[in-house]
Length: 267
Image (cartoon, rainbow, N blue to C red):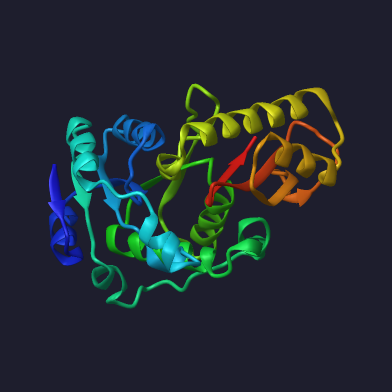
């Protein structure tokens, strides 16, 4: 595995490579990341992984500073997976140039997480746009856990006619049903049990009912142990319109807090 901290050195290295398969991460690697990387390697393209905790997508400095980081452990995982390239840029390396494409931010960015985390999605799209400019990957691997992020990146790529294909990957879950996330490292045993109960509650709701009452659902989630709820919304992922009745395209989108840790999921 070759490690690069400077974008120009990385570009020189990969300029002769026919095609790159790219897996962007913020580190704190878990089973979800590992699944993305394994899928990337199956393409037989050269796999490039980035680790960069992007300050521009955090609303609070405390959240940015407390984001789980364990580079030593991450490097060991990536070496075992036989990743071809690792990009470990500094803030200056990522933001020290003007990208060729302007960020396109779809109106859906103002819903769900965008409503509660001002500046989050402009920050996400900004950094993704820069990575795409630097690496020019043939394929970009992203998970469906961050469904809204996936949707917005896809819209940006289409609108700006960027020659990169997004490979959408299913959410990887722990045995207790909780979606794998770097933030899970900050949960204690009690929090993990509550998160598990919340996941199975929503799974049951989706299987047994075809209508929901938002206020009733919020009360039930608080009863199960959530400290605070940002949203519980039902969307038809075919047209991304909100719905109160279920069909095969309906997904439940949730964001809630456990012990000051914000968790998101879609079921």
